Length: 295
Picture 1 (cartoon, helix red, strand yellow):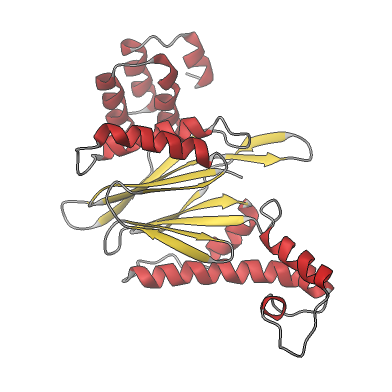
Picture 2 (picture 1 turned 30 degrees about the vertical axis):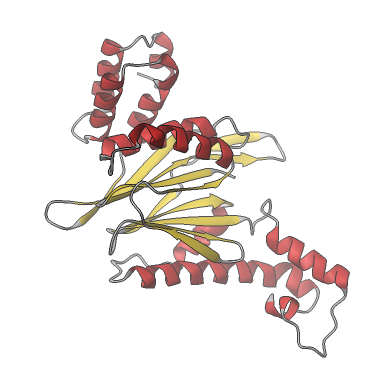
């Protein structure tokens, strides 16, 4: 599994953070992959939680284009989710027992009797989050307004569209939810967050989720924000710079320095080496910082 956390910091922006770890449980191996947040268009990105291989198939069924309406994008993602899951079921446990789709099991004709053990096996396979069917999607879009939409088994979702609302999905959810609530409490009387403040909240929640087995960095962030020209842009800060900032949390860095580090992290004119120089000049990180980031 993995962790994906979404946040709507203000009326112009929606953002996701996700860890990059994948696990091979049979051999006890973990590694990071390039990205789990997929760009759909200038207006939307999608985080994948669970089996990355099935998720890639789902993503391939979502046309990369600028959608005119949020509902159109939502329905396209849901259809891709159903199509891949039903194809996997059909080629495995459904074919085994001669069924053509899951509805023949969940909504059989009155005259059809299904052995209870067969029905139990099929439904258990469909719901098993540890196999290739175990996948959820988190959609962050800014077509009509910033929105977060989760698609989970059995293919239904829930929508968040209010500023300062957030969504968490995947392993480590409890740790991340607790941290999100704690961090947002700092902004109780503030109606909106800046992009830097939103990123700070997400980074801290992501770091907290690492306490759960199966969740690990590096972390990546993508956010969709509307510029002064009224056009949306998908921003993907350099993952190396993102994780330099996350590295600072145990050091109790002054908030002013932390927020300046986040600002520089978002600035694509600032290189990772330049951000590292700022951090080393203003904090107590040691030589292990250089070793970890291969500086």
